[in-house]
Length: 263
Image (cartoon, rainbow, N blue to C red; front, side):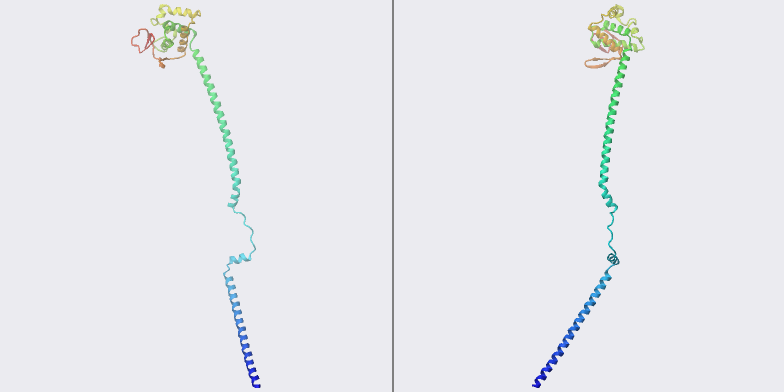
């Protein structure tokens, strides 16, 4: 019995001793793990601290900075709409100004054209008036009577051709320089010597020079005295400024019209 108790005490002591050793070992293991964890954590913190750059340290430690002001480019972008609106306004003003200038130019051109037309008309009127006073009533009377005496049976162009020949002679150095001098030059016009010219002049002076043929003679005389030097023949204009002679039987003539030949 005593031996049995002794054995039980012995086993109990052995068991207690083994438990204490196991506990002590577990505690030591825990301490070792805790120390290693602390060491590892410390090392990681030191490494992280070493990896933080001065700029990062500054960012962490400094206070938050204020929002940066917009750059000049951004300011320009903001001003672009206003600038475009101002540009459009300026363009509109320029268009209005240009349109106004165009209207002014048109009005000026119109006035200038009207003025030129009026001046041309005035010049033409003066020219006509001047031409009308370039010959006297005596010249008209004498030339009309000669045309009637020489070409009363001819067409109007035939009458005008005779009148132009008389006027061409007044411009030539080979003949007198006046209508009267040319018509009354000796041996030039048959009506002067046969009396037909005087009869025509009497009718003119007595107001009886009024028939259709006589009126055509007056018209042809006025045209020739006013400077006409061409006639219409076959629908074309013919220059008659070089002709100095006409007759019913003319040697060396270059043109014939009706009963007359001209050179």
